[in-house]
Length: 517
Image 1 (cartoon, rainbow, N blue to C red):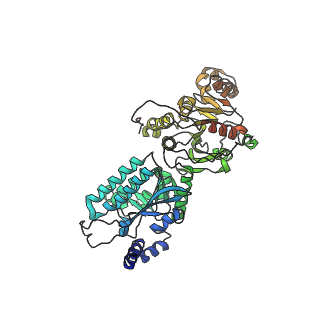
Image 2: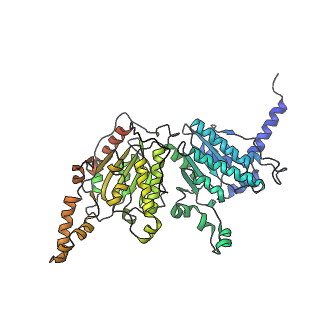
Image 3: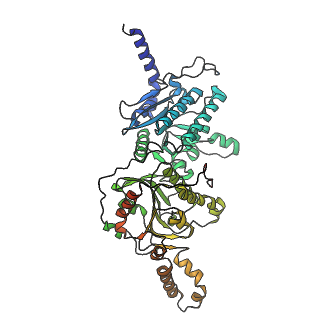
């Protein structure tokens, strides 16, 4: 006996109603604003036909205040799994057309169950945030739901990659879930993220401000540092997430998706020699070096708009996935400051959690001097960078391009901080401080008595560089693996990376270290 036709029809009608979300009219309004629907966002992320929904029929409890007669299809959030470039990914998408995407207990439990499922399967989690916040009618149950989501974010941290796409409002406590993920992608328009909005700020402090000043993607990507990528629209945000996933392993037990060819291409890139300025004081754009170093010149830069004196991002060198950390002399002369230290430390710790080798390009004159930096805690923030490198057990390869002075030499992953290989170009300077400053301190008397102070200074600076800051001095002490030509850089790093892939490093047993927060 076949299944009763009315049962099949009922199932189809029920599914159609749920999949319609808040209805065609509300979806059309979103399209007019350049927004995709919650389901369209998931369709853009996954390979066609691979998405399987989990919890489609879940509903809120009727006992909540004023909710008995309300119908929230899928309780305002769509959860499920699918394939992205052949790899399993778990994702959820909040539906603003259903109760403004507000989070209640059932809504939260759907998210938590999906994340628990992702942990069991070892799959990354992509969240699409578009919500009016806690569902007021559910009172403390809604707060409890947020707590459960935050707790699950923390359990998943360092186990599976977590990527948050902020595609609409994300206010109050809701903003802490994205903040607990590894990467935040936020759309330039239609999205805002903040703890307290302009109205609350005015009521409490009397200060008048705008939504853009406290919660726009531009502000978070350039001032607060909360956002890692700005997307122009929903589709662009999804493509950034797909790019990110292409560099990441499924979970912390797997290796990154290296594309290892049968043989490395070993050769010289003479153009690299021409990129090195003749004068040490002349600024050098490290992006030009990176473009020659990585496959196809492609770098997926993270936090591109924040702390621009340090560049971090993902790339491949001869097919091997690497996390790249580089001083940028075009900004603040490449000096390390509070924000750059935080930016580098967070990125390094992510790479370590997911077995991604780190390549560090060094051209740093020191930590940025200034009253604001000292009062802001540069000691504590700079220590984060030291802590991150020292605790990192993935392959670490450092290349000193030019300057590496004082504590910043150590903070940019010297051999003493655990680098497996340290290379230097022949023009590199490694010392407690720059030659000019050292000469002024060490030869103050001689310079004061010199007939031609300028000529004497130049002579002593050249002598100091040759005798005390030379990379050959460091190499003779065993602090540097080798001094190489710039043209050899890509080949040398590729060989070192390939040889480091089997690296295993044992550490003392402990629960965890105490990061200088």
